[in-house]
Image (cartoon, rainbow, N blue to C red; front, side):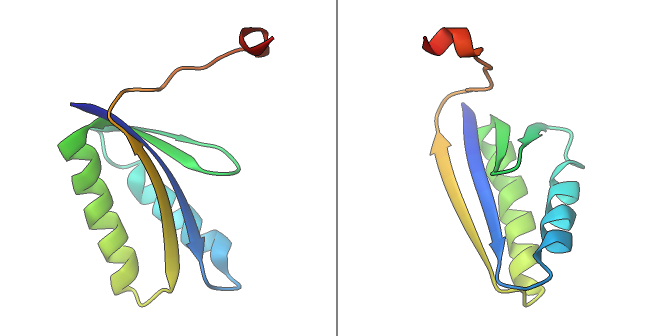
Length: 90
C-alpha cells in the first residue's frame, strides 16, 4: 500500500537547525522512499512498511540521543506526490 506522510520536527533546543538538517540528511539516505522538503515540513512517499520502518529507526535514533524533540505527522493511505499550479485553484 502506498502512503504519504507529512512530518514536522521541532527540537526543543536553541540550536535546532543542525538537528533538523541532520535528521533530513539521514532520511535522504534511504533509497526506497521519496522525500520532498520545504520551509514548513517534509513529505515522505513510498510503501507503508518502508516509510514506517524508516521513521521508526530515525525517530528512535533521535529520541535516544536525549534530544527533546517533537514530531508532528499526518498520514494518508495514498500516494499524493502531485503538484498543482495556481491555475488549479482559481
